[in-house]
Length: 174
Image (cartoon, rainbow, N blue to C red; front, top):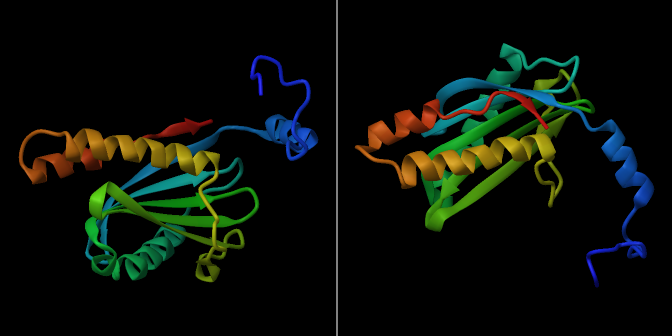
């Protein structure tokens, strides 16, 4: 297919849906909430907030409990002991993502979903559910921070982990 002109789109390309998504796309705010311990891991925590929504202390505590339970089985998955936790107060509900680094430069991802403002009702997302565009922006930054600070960083491991903990993304995500 000649990519210079796409006048004849394949049938799976949903023009109306893609244009509606483009019309509704907006920035969401990301806030770093520090590095915590959960499930024996160092966990860098972020809040991602849709317009009109806020991640509360109660949301963060519930997400850390979920992350701790998930990460508690980390050794069985070959975990390296570092993770990222995203607490997302979305427009259509709440999401919690737990991404950890495991053996062989791989990562492990768990996604939890629930109704807005009900952190005790978060449950594992359906099979195949992946990060949204805003969550993916945080995870992209975190992949780069892990490589930059831990894998390619200089100094002792505590110095590398301190640099990793301070390397955050904040502000508007597109």
